[in-house]
Length: 173
Image 1 (cartoon, rainbow, N blue to C red):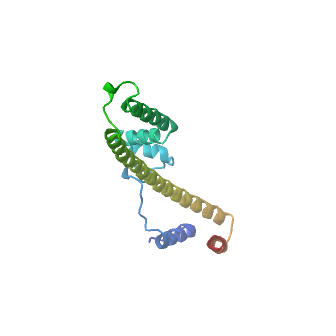
Image 2 (image 1 turned 30 degrees about the vertical axis):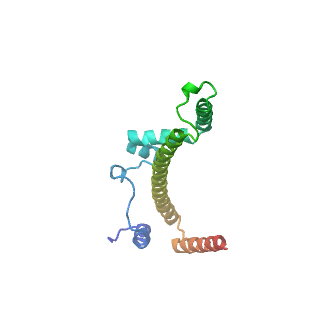
Image 3 (image 1 turned 90 degrees about the vertical axis):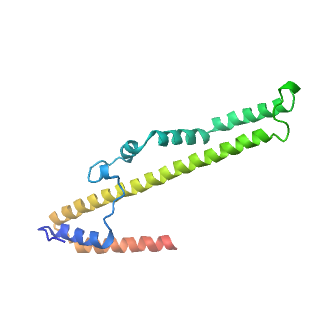
């Protein structure tokens, strides 16, 4: 660790070495850039497959999907129960073809849901990384401002540690 002329920077660097491994989860193209909007970053990383998975999952999670399937199932059962004509029956009770189609649909839909959940987890990780960077930036600015105002940064840090300890104890009970 190189010593700078700023005691605040030296203190921050010391704490950074103790508390954070320096590993970043941002994509290489975005490391060091001041982009702070996770949506902008995620849009640059999305490909056609990701967009398709998101659209399918969005549709499958809607009431429109439920209504369409309800109509489809009722229509299927009515046709195959011979309501319209015995000559149009193609899947007799217990509707094995319908069962197979619905099972295949469930397999694919569950896969799309998992893909979307993985993307949401990646988004949460990215948001946490951006929050961390923002917190570090705020801390550095706050400490520099406090130093310029002549505040005792040691006292402030002890008070912060005390409040955090109280908050953690309150959350544990």
